[in-house]
Length: 508
Image (cartoon, rainbow, N blue to C red; front, side):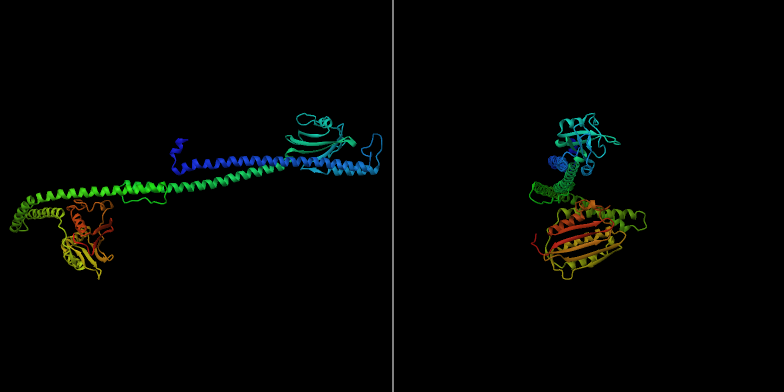
């Protein structure tokens, strides 16, 4: 049983444990009440039925007394004497009146003398039944004649019946005529009302148990839902946090233990998130320090030979006609040497990004100049640039040269995502009294979801010939302006990059 319960979920455990505790007492109480009520009803109905039989016997004896007072000694007549016709008619009427009285469905009144001869009977009047026996062989008539007063119970099988039925008879002695007056009824008819009450009580108890059990089940199910719903929510949040999403929070409702646990979990995830940010910041600082040392040592050693290679490549390129087979190789040497030089420059820019020199700048005017320049770049072939600048945009405190680098980098990235052509929309707007926003939206190939989180990391790139430093430098410049950059992208649906900048702030 314990193993079975351990396999169940919490809701079904509560139902399995609580419902028996609720329903079992109800069943016990209902059974006790039903037993007591049925017993009392049985006693009451039985007593009433017995009283009814006694009343019928008294009624019959009263009729016999009344006849005896009107016709003293007339009926039954003495042996050898002839009855008077009037007496005979009156006695016949008396017998019919007694025989017409029914007890239950099949019970009746009968009379016999002390020798067992039936004097009044519906079917066997005048027959001596002193030796009659019940289905078990007991001579019940002889006992009645001997005792003259009392109750007797015996099994009796009628003609055509398959099994005997129990009969109960009350009999009393009528001394003036030496008769025994008896009233009999089958026991199932005698207790029919009691059995009906018993069935009614049983049905009521079953109905009560079903109603209360159903109500208890619903209430326990509702209570278990109230308990398990926040636990289920907690499990979902824990799973998401386990996957590395430390921004998830548990909903805290009420002041119970679950709410306290949810609050403690939220505080724990907040501490973990801060620790992760600190680790990331320390790792970034370590990278920056390494880059600074690397770039300062490598830049001089690489730039000098690169300058020599570029010089000789340019000299050979100028001396060699374009149709010469070796001209292509000289051109490749010159291009790749320039690429190496740009990588070194990007390293120096990322490792030693200067503090921005802030001054009021007309952002719309700056972007217009950048768009005119970028539209003629080779990476923007087939790309149409549209602009939607807010007309009343206030001047923004920023470093124009650094922001030019940011805008050009984002525009060229968008152009690279639309190799087959497309549309790049650039918009500006004032978000509130303290911030403006620039949005760069393209309809290019988009960025896979798994790459969004890594897109700003140094040396991470999805391009075949990229350095992975462009967006890292872009974010670094924006953060030095106390701004924010965000990317929304869907594969094959395009990308939107939003740059939010403060309008005014203290110079860093």
